[in-house]
Length: 245
Image (cartoon, rainbow, N blue to C red):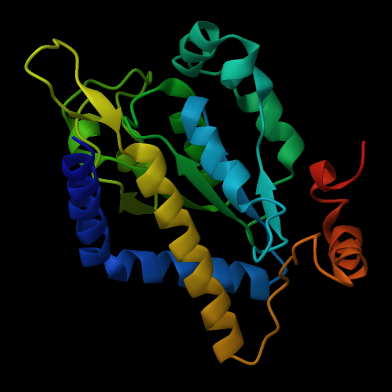
């Protein structure tokens, strides 16, 4: 069973690699934002919010990353409740009003099904502010279901650039004849690969242009604290969650 799961993950990785141009396009958009002193906002509900955490304040990661953390949409505030809230229309606007989006910015929205009200509202709100929106979603999964958004649109219908994570409908990819339910999700491991590959290419593009990317160092290596604190000072007014509470 383990080898089969690994094999299926590898197959999806190869699908993502086959879509390499979109990853490069996303990196180009992010590098332009950084060159223009913009921010990279990132948002997801439920398990998708972990992709936001993955690239925020990360050793070897970019500093101008603004994760939109809404605790009511995370599992620790009530798992079933977070799923219920994610489906709502017009829930997220008060939280987005605090983000102070600029037309120099980018918003990455992660939602594997891409049908719920909150991620779609986030994308639409950002687009109204002139923000370029990148979606990490599963087009096949999304198009197999009706949208829960009042517009009838899915995330893949409203985003400016779509990165497919190739998750199957329901996300779980494994089967056992003794069980009725599928198991073995793929969206998180593939989502982490996608987001990190985009960041890697973004850093590469900046370096190619002779620009030193604003990268955090691991706090566990010598002289990292001063380096990281300088980046925190630069961005903390626009990314308050960077500051010490």
